[in-house]
Length: 388
Ligand code: C2E
Ligand code: SIN
Ligand code: SIN
Ligand code: FE
Image: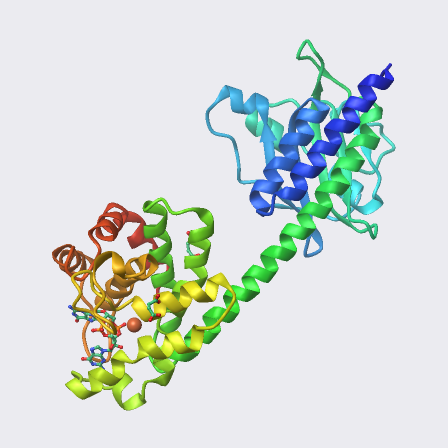
């Protein structure tokens, strides 16, 4: 029997989990946290999470203490696989009925139940699933958004035992808190994606006259993120760069076609017009209370400054150039060098890298050049991934 002290401790524990879940905004980390906390709470050896999506249940996360401790490869090709939303599987049954299933032994199900346990995962990983506690994840309007499945409850002696009945109610409560946290993280993710999408579309408008603008923006952004990670920037700063870097050339909107699209070399007068894209960009982006647009403005105005003071529009030198501008300057030029332009052919990656190395301390901040060269493998991966 559970004493009242034990049960109040359990409730406290549950409450602490609820608070922790509501604080995690990153979906992947949140899913991990839910599984981990649920497993610790119910002393389960393993667990998995399914989310409803497109008429099915997607297998989205799994943890398994026993397989982890054995080391070696776990079969992970189940991630992203889908279970039908019907009574045939344990998770499907729970999602359809919205009822908890507490199964003492998955290999000895009563003959009258409609669901079956799929042994494939066990067989491929030499694991034995015995007790299963599968609970629906409900949001407050009653909708089931997924299923939390805990596997093999352990007693003090590390033997597999059935899940105590009292955990059914407690896990249901934990799963509902998890559902709300997941729903919020997904909404946030959706808003961020929509925001990023808007930024890319607006930035594309600035360059739509060029041929391969979107891929160019994705590459410059991708390279910038790689360099920023190598420089040890924080996640928040990297996110700002992810959204702000695509807007660096938005001022090209104000540059006449005759200049921007000129197939040959620009005259000095034409280049003066071209240089204005930094100031025009700053004008478009200035005056926002949003940190993101303040950073975007800073990048737009400073991405053509050079470390030795010979750049434009102000001829700023060294540390006087905003740091984010010094970062984006390099990916921007690297992509220009390795791409074909109306006014020039593409250089090879090796040629471009030589030119960049040569410009360390002249055009570019040496710290940024080092971070770039040190992450060349990842840079090339981004380049290959983001072709037109
Ligand atoms: P962009 O084409 O995106 O190039 C960005 C930066 O990459 C250039 O900034 C320059 O620093 C570097 N870059 C690009 N191609 C080369 C190259 O062949 N050699 C070297 N060493 N560096 C290169 P920059 O020069 O301030 O130019 C800014 C923008 O002005 C360019 O953006 C492009 O849109 C335009 N532009 C520059 N030169 C010409 C030109 O001769 N003809 C035309 N039609 N446009 C030009
Ligand atoms: C990107 O978002 O453009 C690329 C890469 C990343 O997330 O690190
Ligand atoms: C300026 O805005 O004139 C200076 C450069 C900057 O902070 O972006
Ligand atoms: Fe530019």
